[in-house]
Image 1 (cartoon, rainbow, N blue to C red):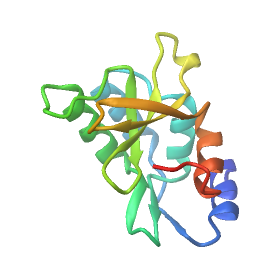
Image 2: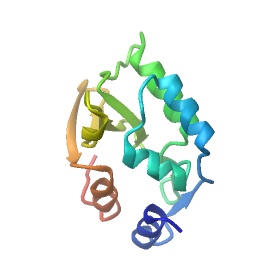
Image 3: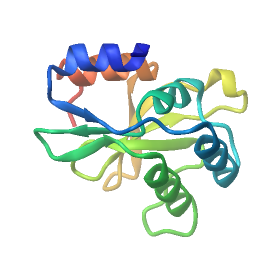
Image 4: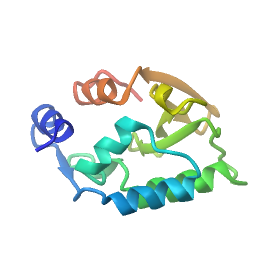
Length: 144
């Protein structure tokens, strides 16, 4: 098992289900479609699991790669609910508001996790990186 699954299984205590990992071809195709590299932490997570399902809440808190690509392309385009181009949605809070990684000009600087509100058309930082996001989410420290 990898770093992500070890941590998520330990903290999730059976409340999470994991999809089979993404292939390197699928990841490369996603990056081609998105026209940008995936942040390193997200790419690493997707190589261990192609999405994370919250068993109790019955939704994907981390989306499978196909949904991630489709949602971002749709919400970056001419969609009534627009997502800023510097945010990459990777999952949601169960109400439809996405969790996003902030993208920077330099891919190595990607990282901050933002909770985006469609109603407020604004986001708020909830963690400095994806690893801390999962720690806080699984310890119920992130309130949506």
